[in-house]
Image (cartoon, rainbow, N blue to C red; front, side, top):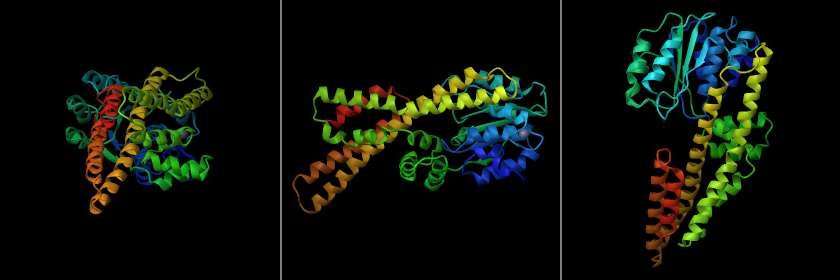
Length: 360
Ligand SMILES: [Zn+2]
């Protein structure tokens, strides 16, 4: 396995088991794969690397023209099908099928669909494709989790599990990438196994200010409308700053794709519009994740108050019961807000939460 350290799979961090499976399958592929792993575990990087390995004469050397084309998303035999709405639609699955029936220029027609857990139970069409796949087609599906509705789809695929990265693995990666150990630790601790998020946070100079903003809320809120409105405004201003490092990373990645494409004689990246759609979706996703993280930091403060209140009740402190009750109410409100974040307008939700918290 000469050159294994620098081949296409080196982009897949901390997933030795998955990479081992994929190396094996690159030489003996079947028709369909399902990469299952939480956000930031690298399923997209895994899909790109595996596609490159499938088409490369050397199982993914990372250096040949074929590898370069795949790694720059410019290989015509590899298609990332775009999901336009919140969930996959039947017509998008039909589009995937149409692409899979194209005759490949080289060995395989590879079709990639990400986040297929977002299919709202409409997996019949997908299942049908997987039951009778075209001879040269290989499907790479990814999912963050496996809802009941996907059980039959799973049965048609080789499942490749991706694990949430350990804090240590993330710290190692960031330190190797040139960041100071202390900054790497803070980012890894806040990223909950999501390498992508850790890479954004480690560049984020306003990160600790944002944590402080959330944690100081219980003391800031005084029940006046003006204060609540100001706090909501501050949260969303901080959020706009928080996505800047992600947008920087996306710009760098797009540039790398373009450079890669140029190195094989292309003018630019073929699927540029789709890449931009994916980037916008990722930004939206990051905002939600960051709000959830903020809400968790806020809930921590009320948890501490709850514990202090319970201790006070033991000591027969007369204020302890109401303090405990207020903390419980606050924690419930925060948890409810966090759960509804991705389906309801977040500014509305947050405003509502802040107004209620000010009165507990
Ligand atoms: Zn190659």
